[in-house]
Length: 348
Picture 1 (cartoon, rainbow, N blue to C red):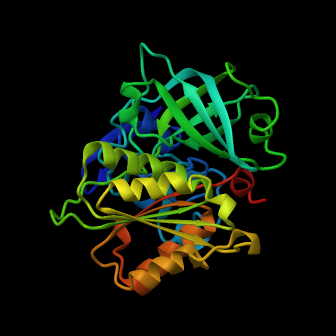
Picture 2: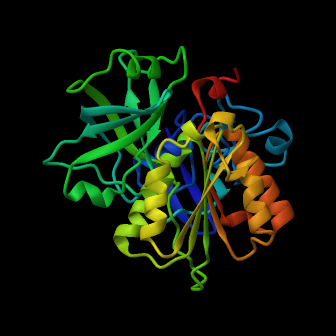
């Protein structure tokens, strides 16, 4: 049995099987709904149920509270329809542009620019290259069927010359996949991946005013931001952008020189690193504190900006709350990719 989903205000329709999550059906049919983790942890796919009935699977309270559910909100990644439904959600042009595919990837290199960060280069099939938008992610399919998600850190435009993707992987001790990356994974190993996924990528400024962009990253949340910057650089974008990269110590800014070089090369890009816990041996003379506070200090009025935030859930949540409430950022101009770990997803 299948049901019809109608998305308002666009009027877009698609079909969903009775026990299938709405988002899974949308992705399969190339329908561009907003989403992030696909696991009920980040809340990026939250929308309003206007008509019909759904059953929710397991999800985090921070992603959808009981009060929000009672008020008619839902998570498309965890909600399965029981009737035809009508939902209210912003369509994301380009989110379903490229088909989701399974593909083998061969490890080209593994570099460790910081003790707990690995930059992994993966070779893709040359005769059938992966298509994606800068900011999207792939999922590795592990032997037991579990999955781990990582954003591409290079622009898709670079694949034209070299069919490879770059991933930035932080070591989480005890992590099923990251322990492997930091111990046994080696060059020429084959991994299975599926993608592209995600609706985190640069939006066209429909206002026609070329709104300036705030690119906000913490830790390895820098990866999709790097892909976006690379994309802007290759495309010759003239939009003004400021990169704020937050980390604990200087060593955690694992591609600091790359960001400095990009800002020096791109006349419309500024780079502002911020350390929350600089060490005395760092000799740090730059900005300190919470990275989103640095944005608020520099931009007390964000009414005419777009913000793209990626990294730890606490940073993303705090930035969205404070930018909207205290700096006047329109809530529909905050785009985020919250890096939820497996512990985050399961409420650990």
